[in-house]
Every structure is written in C-alpha cells, then in structure tokens.
Amino acid sequence: MRRWVLARRPDGAATVKDFNLETVPVPKIGDGEVLLKTLYLGVAPVMLRYMTNETSFEKPMEIGDVMIGRGVGRVVASRNPGFGIGEVWQAKLGWREFAVIDDDPYYMPFRMRHTDLPLSHGISTLAMSGFTAYIGMHDIGAVTPSDRVLVSGAAGGVGSQAGFIARALGAEHVVGIAGGPEKCRLLTERLGYGAAIDYKIDDISNRLDELFPDGVDVFFDNVGGALLDEVLGRIRRRARVVICGRISEYLLPPDQCHRYRNINCIGLRDAKMESFFVYDYAEHFDTYETQLAEWIRDGRVHPLEDILVGLEQMPTALISLYEGTNAGVRMVRIDPDAERRPAP
Ligand SMILES: NC(=O)c1ccc[n+]([C@@H]2O[C@H](COP(=O)([O-])OP(=O)(O)OC[C@H]3O[C@@H](n4cnc5c(N)ncnc54)[C@H](OP(=O)(O)O)[C@@H]3O)[C@@H](O)[C@H]2O)c1
Image (tube, rainbow, N blue to C red):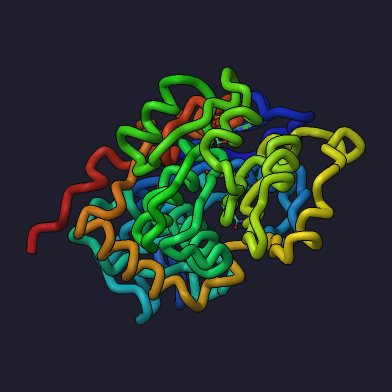
C-alpha cells in the first residue's frame, strides 16, 4: 500500500517537496485493532500547522511520520468487537490506503450511520467541516430568523455549508464573501446565499453599507485580519462574531498580523465574540450528524464537494487550499469504488 510521509517542514507555504510517497506492506492487525480501507481523505488548512508542530491539539510530527489527517474508511478486518466488518467509519486515518486504528481516543472515530447518503459526506457535511459550520451558526451564532448574517470564506469547505445552515435556522438575510466572480455566482446560485461580496474586486466597505445598512447581527468569520476589522466596525447591538478561522493570517509571522482598530465595538455594542474548536464538541457529533443528514434529505443543505482522485493528489490538494482553488469541501477519493455498497 502507499502512504505519504513528512519529508521536511515547510517554510511558509508547503510545496510538494515537503512530502514523500512510500510503498509499504498492508499492516497486519493485533488484538483490539481494526484495519480500514481508506475511501476518502480530507484536507484542511490546519494541516500545514501539523507539519510545523504549531497546534496544541495534535501530536507532534517527526520527519518520516505518516501525514496526519481524517478520512472515511471501511472496516476490512477487525479484532475489536466495537468495529464490524463492512462498517464505514470516520477517523484520523492518516494519508494512506489502509490504516490500523484501535480504541485509543486519539483517532476520534465515529461510525457513519447515514450510509444511504454518499459516503463522501463523511468528509464534508456529516463530518468536521459540516459540524464546524453547524456549531458556528447554531451553538455560538445562535442564529434567529430576524438576524442579518454574514459569512467570510463562504465558498470554501465550511463556508459552503454555513449559508445553508443559517437559512435552515430561519435567517432570511444571509450574505457571503468570496474571491472572484465565479465563486460569487456559486454563492448565490448554488450555496443558498441571498447576495455575495467579491473581496477581490468590490469595494467591501460600500458593499457592506448597501447590504447591511443597519449592521450585522451574526458574522461567521473564516478569514480574520482586515476583513474582520471592517465588519467589527459594523456589528449591531448584541451581535455574535463567530471566530471560526483566520486563513488570511496563517502564513504570516505574528508581528505582521493585523492590529484591530474596531475591537472596542464588542464592548460598545454588548456583542459577543467567540472562537471555538470543533473537537471540543465531540459529545454532540451524533446530534449534529442526524440534524444535517435530515437537512440534506429534505433539500435544505446541498453539500458541495470538490473531489480529486488518487492518493498521489494529496499534497496538491492541500497546497492549493491556500490558493483558494477549491469550491466547497476539498477531498481526495482514494478508493475508486468508494461509493459501491457491498452486496446485501
Ligand atoms: N474552528 C474550527 O474548529 C475549525 C474547523 C475547521 C476549519 N476551521 C477554519 O475555518 C476556515 C475555513 O476552513 P475550510 O476548511 O472551509 O477551508 P477552505 O475550504 O480552504 O476554504 C477557505 C477559503 O478561504 C478563502 N481564502 C483563502 N485565503 C484567503 C485570504 N487570504 N483572504 C480571504 N479569503 C481567503 C479561499 O476562498 P476565496 O477564493 O474566496 O479566497 C478558500 O476557499 C479555516 O481558517 C480553517 O482553519 C476551523
């Protein structure tokens, strides 16, 4: 089987030379272990920080370690009564064609229960990116029908679901920010946004004046920096500012990160600004999965998946996230038969 390992630590943006593709035997399992055949692997901006050991929540990586990442896999051998042959699980599988896991909570496994839906949703809506959008809009943003909602990074993995979720919670005024006319069209034509702001072309300040003359109630922010500052200046009384990510600043040294001018608006307007980490909500994943599966079935949420094919694509899939080439949730199909269901 093939697997990708860390060849060297990236200096700023990652390049293909930071990864090595190795071929090794398919591992054998011992007592308590499970062998999963990888169907899909996800990529996320945070993986760059795994490679440089910059996160507090992921184990440190040594050079030569298998790249860390979550995926969807089917159980092909099991010496653990908790995992049945043929079941589909979402877990930290790593960038490899087969993975051995056990009961160690590190792997954070959860069984996909809604396998009538495409299994790729185990990387998108029925997994971390969908749960992240749901937590931000529902648990933290506490969106209500009268709220005027704004989302940045709206055509990316999380943002492509955040608009649908805000609408499913009843909000009617939901606006997305993305880069370029094509992505902005996607927001209004396919992703449930009522209007779009093109941060690369539009005068953001004018567009915010037009679309939010009375201010923003909920800002779901994936981007951070100057854009967040601009919106902070326009929040309404008792607004909720949801700090989901800061993708515009991940590659910057701390001294080049934005200095906020409008942070005082949080206090002036009795607003709330809260950051969160999806793994801290693990006890609720089953509830989120059930709610999101229901919204997919009744047509309120349409997962947009950007699927590359073949394990060899993994480094490109990750590197190009930072170039904004993806629309929706970027993932890689590892098994060509990933969607084939076993005969009953
Ligand atoms: N809090 C959590 O637990 C949690 C969980 C998952 C993800 N996140 C964070 O959420 C954010 C979005 O994640 P994702 O998986 O949706 O990522 P994604 O699919 O890579 O989408 C992010 C989008 O951000 C835009 N972008 C990139 N660089 C930008 C810049 N300099 N300025 C403005 N926009 C930029 C790109 O679209 P454009 O072409 O429109 O620029 C890109 O498609 C990331 O910051 C990630 O770290 C947080």
